[in-house]
Image 1 (spheres, rainbow, N blue to C red):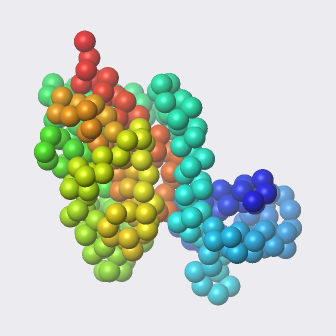
Image 2: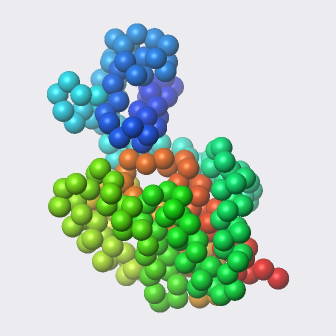
Length: 246
């Protein structure tokens, strides 16, 4: 893959996350200051490589799970390099306000379970996704309304696939125990509900309940990964700071 193809792929992913409609060559030509024909040729190559697809004839392109994986891997490299620098994990723009809002809400809680629930509820509010966290042997989930209001879940079959995933997520977390500081499971990569078109983004953190507690969100594969991954990891870091404050 050339650098330009990579940039075009990432632009398709980011535009699709914002607009929720297939991205056409005209839009990309304006972004890259080149002809639509040039963009169409590059999109054709990306489609052959399996990173984008055309959902309908004459429509623009949308990312595939493979395209999202390439994009997320690049984001994870950036997060890994700044893992001990919480300020670097804050989302672009509004970073100070977002970080302060999360910290203030969590720090206001006097009990560990309340702090974790507050962190989850804050993620729901900030991302529009479903939020979840392990609290001891329990799984706390919030935000069903926002998740199912997304255009991806008009079809009943997809809602059922999401339900199947959620029914099995607690035993799966206990069995697999993801080790990375930030873990992203995209679409068909999910252990169950593979046809649900959702991504699970979770962060491991230490709590009084376990050294392997988890907090995260579940949302459509079409989302702002850079922002959401940063928020989830930041929430995990702040929970550790608050719950183990000396």
